[in-house]
Image (cartoon, rainbow, N blue to C red; front, side, top):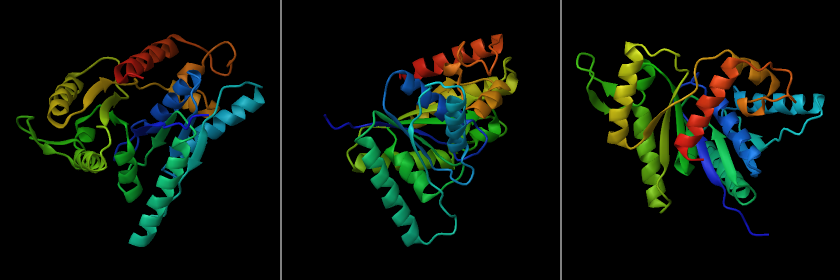
Length: 266
């Protein structure tokens, strides 16, 4: 059997509460439904949202005698108070585990914490595809760029954008292919207001400047909390998964997800 060389998709943002784990789980299930071998890594071991999501899925699968599909999964729980030597050991261990997973799977999806760390940066440098969910606000946009308050002109890239630039430099030094970066406007309201139109306009201008593609993401919907409790995604909803009743909101959300998948080119 030929050795695999898995594609690495990183879902990252230096801010919590942007829907990273929801996006990561939907990507996992998307690939599983394409009959791909999928591995996943939760680098936010303290909160462990993706890990809990996958555990909920396994519980639901067993309780309802279904074969929904599960990834090969690991969760990294790293202490904040580590020495430089310990950080380097953690990075080496992570890289070893990813290299092992890469030879056995078609895709690896990494969910990152909402804070900077050595492992956070190492994961970004590994990304063949980087997906950055962000809330549709000027506050979240500050991570990508510093905006002039009076004119709304872009002054300089923000600190997260600088992290991505460094990750791209690291990839270039290793002669890896260029990272594809997508910024996902997540938790979008169903009717755009003036502020959201401004954010979209700024994202389009900034994307041309620092080389990312802005795309519209998932709307703000209660259904995602309900799906999390069962370990389900929009892709799982059918007559088999009767725990969640299908509604017009689910159908609209599935259309949003389809647009994301098409835009990223999965």
